[in-house]
Image 1 (cartoon, rainbow, N blue to C red):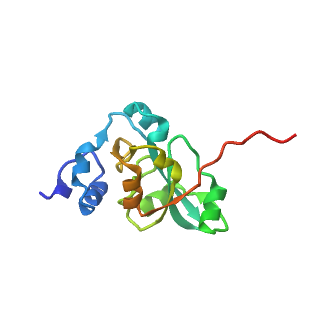
Image 2 (image 1 turned 90 degrees about the vertical axis):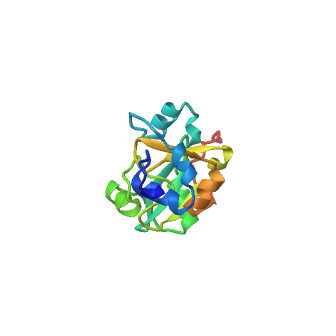
Length: 172
């Protein structure tokens, strides 16, 4: 049995990606939970970490072409900023079918890398505010830790400022 075939808490495709990237040691750090960690809030609660330490992997369609956005769990993606970053006419949230077709994973379990297809990746700079972030390991029940720079590197991500900004005081 090869390292990629050994039982793991991670999705088999993601375990294969870890092996292909020579990240086999990371497989032992995957944490599986009896209850789903489908949302960033569920994952943070299960791990006992801050919501912003969760790395969400979100798929959007930019002029119909899938793009992955990596975002900290406490923030929301600003579609206008993504549109500007990509030079697209229109950016929309991908539906469940497009997410699965593009990544090979279901919503709530999409990891930042190890996808079925090569997709453009934008990584919000807010991820760099942490020494370690937790991301889905291919299922809604499993997560893994990684330093954000390494995670963004393996995802092939481009750093960008694509999170919604809090509104400041309004001029009167």
